[in-house]
Length: 124
Image: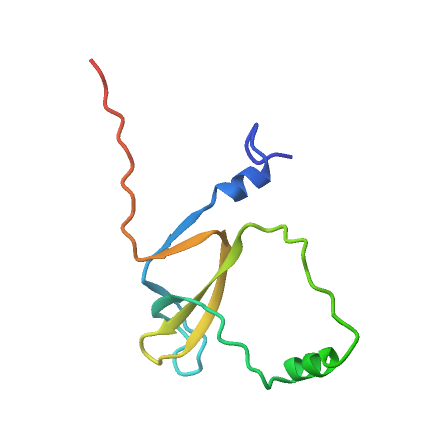
């Protein structure tokens, strides 16, 4: 069943291109020292550099070495055009960091000014 008459779910997902998030947010801190709602600094999560000596990478490289070609499947059928946004929250009191995933979007903007709604002017 469509969410709005005439619009499908995929059209609505594709229309979410930019998400504006404030740089600070008052939210619950799960650490044992706080355990209450405090001000948090918001940043976007970014995956770190993959380690060459992690067990999975060593196992893959050993299996891949020598003759025999590609041993694991390589994924080609990419269907998603967006990624789920993950934000990193740092408590201003105890400096504990935790993460929170948000909805799907193509881009994220931190601390940008909100767009003002256009007011309809009455013509007399």
